[in-house]
Image 1: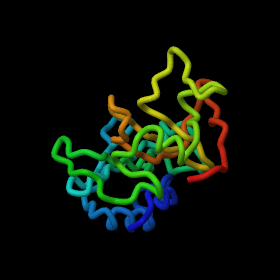
Image 2 (image 1 turned 120 degrees about the vertical axis):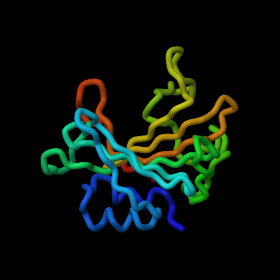
Image 3 (image 1 turned 30 degrees about the horizontal axis):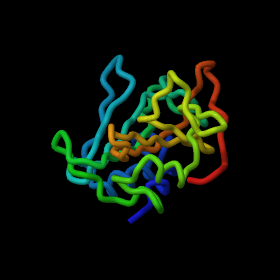
Image 4 (image 1 turned 90 degrees about the horizontal axis):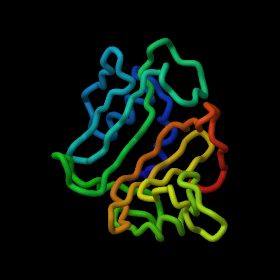
Length: 178
C-alpha cells in the first residue's frame, strides 16, 4: 500500500489523462466527477475506502503550474477521513510514516514541524486569533492539511495543489519533508 504522499504525482492531472485513470482504478472509483455549470468543483469517492477526490475547474485554480485546456476538470485534492461518517468507512490506507488517524496534534507536529498556517511564534504558540484545528504545510508543487477534533486527534488528512495567499501569489514553498 502506498504512502499518501506518493499520490501527489496525480495532483494537477485532467480528466481523460491516462495517469489519472490509473489512480481512479487504484481507489476502485468508476464514476467520473461532474462539475455543474457555475460550480468550481466536483467530487468522486469510494465510500468503502473513504477516499474522496476533488476536481476543480481550471479557471478556479489558485496556482497554475501548467496551462490547462479551457474548462478542464483538474484533480486538486485527495482527502481521507479517519472515522466512519456519512456512509463512508474509515480510511485504512497509509498516511505516512509516523502518522495515522488517531495520532495526536503533538505527534503530527513532531513529524512535520510547525505548519505554514496557522502561524506560530518562535515559542511555538499560535496567535490569539488563530485556530489550530486545521493546519496546512506548503511543499514544492503541493500542500497538505491535517484536521483535528476537539481532543486534538487527527481526523482528516488531505493533499492538494498549492494555495495562493491573500495577495494572489503562491505561498512560499518549502522543499522540506513530505
